[in-house]
Length: 510
Ligand code: BG6
Image 1 (cartoon, rainbow, N blue to C red):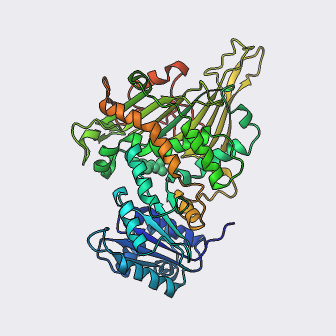
Image 2 (image 1 turned 90 degrees about the vertical axis):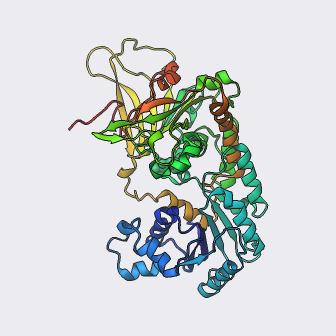
Image 3 (image 1 turned 90 degrees about the horizontal axis):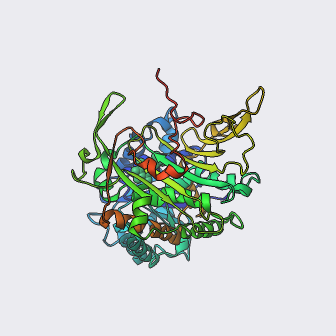
């Protein structure tokens, strides 16, 4: 197991939602699991005027996000955690003299012996990343001559390719690439990491993992929620920027990458970059028209309750064309994947919350059992990212009796069936990795840029192209009906149910 050295975690934007909702609960889990180092300090920094005590109350003792986890842990146990948290008010602006902040860090470092090892977590809008980095640098807080210094940044990492490049340049002026950790919480999910293990720790899958045996690959990411209180942010972003450019292309890169020579962070990330660079960029309007679909949910009734349409949501322009549904068909131009279509979709207000990867294998080259009666003949490997995490293989078996009638059968595995099945939450796992200096599950600058390179032409086309449509779909259904045309050549979307092994269309009525 890697060692976690004494250190201080300095969170910028600490009075914001992410700190209370995700970061502190993740730290509390690490504390409960005994993963925090002996000397550990969290220093919250932002523009609100809070005392250490008020901060501790807000994010620990009185936090609704921690209530369940605290459960019946004794008061002393919880207070011992809370007492490791401190707060520093930066004043009215992030672009200010960080002299007082630097002094507070130095004092805490001496008093609590955190060995000059600091992580700066920027939970701020991306427009502040460079400014904060510059101000930290002015205080020498990027300097690693005594203790290491790391910088974690949140998504969105850029708005398009050119802004992502500018952000990278801006950060790299002050921190070395090896000090920068770009978070993508999907990489913190066990099941996403398991894609690597499935492929590279088994000899039964990898030989089939190519154009000779795979017909097409389908990835679905569906959420039942709408944009909730984030209408203002979402309307400027849309599904392609919010989910596809980062989380889904990360999953794609793990599905298509070549085997790395080892499990070292750089070796894995080198292969992921190569994979992303091999996505065929769609350039002309006709290709973009035929291979991309964007849509928006409209008002409907779900489970007897009225649900607002996207344009009625708070913070959303009533004439908005921003997509809450995006479906993209694309190809990967390399030796392994030549000619294999990929279908990837992401959306809000779908019938169920689910993320899964489906590998559709080719039908046997020579059909011996012609009238086998098997419906939907291809073999499938379904990798369930969430929920009901696990894997399912669909294959043909003989129906007992005369002749050779073939029926589909399932071979399934569920994470919940493992004896050791405690799954760390994504933020918990990612924070611990950064604390230990392991960047494997963080996105590198060139990875992020390669993903934008693929996404940029689609965004431009959706913004400026001729004949671009934003289709509507009723909240609670599987997207617009014409989305089926995209996948027409190879069948239908597999509209998954809540449970991995349930067939599409499965529903419980009482
Ligand atoms: C975030 C997006 O990155 O991921 C949200 O900004 C989305 O819009 C969320 O709801 C989904 O994450 P998860 O882990 O619930 O699938």
